[in-house]
Length: 257
Ligand code: GLN
Image (cartoon, rainbow, N blue to C red; front, side, top):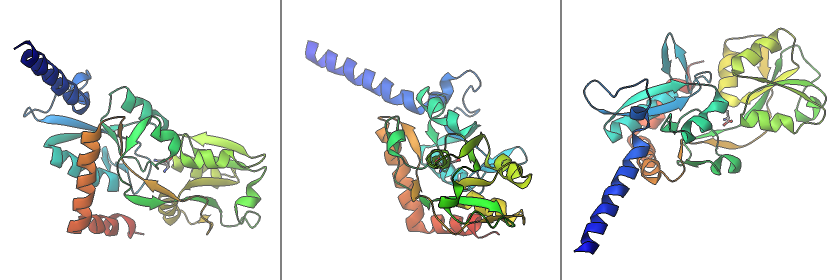
């Protein structure tokens, strides 16, 4: 009898623990749960990364948001989005302020120490952006001793730090770096290819050099050990690929310019 009771107690505790991860939002003071009593799932992002996440008026939209909506739907939860600086995302996840990160976040060995990643959902690379009239910088070897803008805490930041003698200026938004490039305060910007292409399509003064500095893959990050959520996300990604929804999104978000 005693044994059975302790098993029941253990099972109840496990159940309670498992629930914790999923309800991060309900514990924080600024949200009281969805009006209809639906569970809330919180996506953390940095909405400075078009076309993956950006603002349309007050709203955060983009490729990653579409995937996140599907994840929420799968879990029967309401999606809430928290917009913050990119380097604040992993700490926010660890602190339970958000449930997952969908932010064009590349899988790295370093990050794997602090988070678990879903399967990759998009292949990416770092590229060099310069002003079109700059004939001096033609590849990574020309970046030595130059002033380079990056987005703080990104793989582009890491990559630029390796360049000999370069002065690295860190911005919270890639777009701010592009503005400084345009105002001749920087020699180059190192950024992910898709947002670089997005910025270049709206700014005819800048160009993307045809060299890839890295090969990366974006994935969705969850708190370490939250296998249940990783599994759900992987299922959603698979289903979206099989149904053609994924390709439709690629077309919608990446062929605009
Ligand atoms: N892919 C890059 C990284 O993971 C940049 C992501 C971003 O700026 N949103 O660091």
